[in-house]
Length: 298
Ligand SMILES: [Zn+2]
Image 1 (cartoon, rainbow, N blue to C red):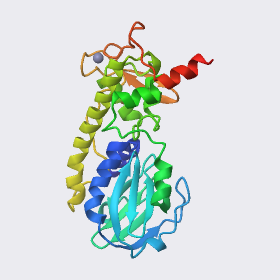
Image 2: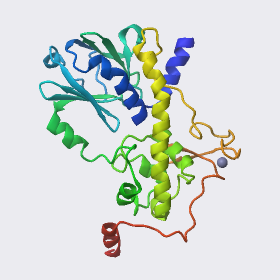
Image 3: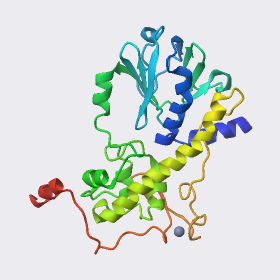
Image 4: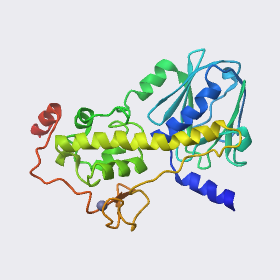
């Protein structure tokens, strides 16, 4: 029962950049510069068919990198295994992997790892470095290095809601529903605000909020890394204090007003109606020059 509850909790947490980066940091010491000895797949497809791992066996992994929500396994022969964890994918040490939903087992020189993915929305794509780069070229900046200029250039003229824009990986990579909500709360902005209503100062506040939110999440994930590498540790995603996500009806951590939940673009949006308000229309609106030209043509 306890195990089932733990698994449900784990499934509920869709991996975003901090989860993927935490997993990368857990795996890197085990697999970088190690030779892949054996691989076993479940035979079931994930979101796309699972590639044949035979050509990778006997090869050394040079580097385990990450871009957005993608893990990038760089092998010594120039091949890159691009991995997306989808809705529920996670890596476990063999000894602690749940018995079900094991779709890939990789045996390295000093580590045996299992990839589990109950909902099978994950993806494994075997390609080369050039094609991997081309595939990732549309991604926006990493959330830890995003600044207001990047946000304004990509979303400043958009009519879309702020929350919807944050989920667009072309605007900022690696953010999903949890951290989009949390970043809007930290920036004190109503997630339903159309992007074009925001002034430069709002974008600056939002960029800072994104960086701080992701930083905190990575710090929370840091404690998981120790337990993952330790033989009796608990694998899976980390728990952390969320300010608004999943807290509908509960008091805002800042002012005590009940957190509200709305549906927006098919997703749940959580916000404090008091702390997070849409900016006044009088705010000086910023739009990238190129977009402005495009609009005046209509
Ligand atoms: Zn509040």
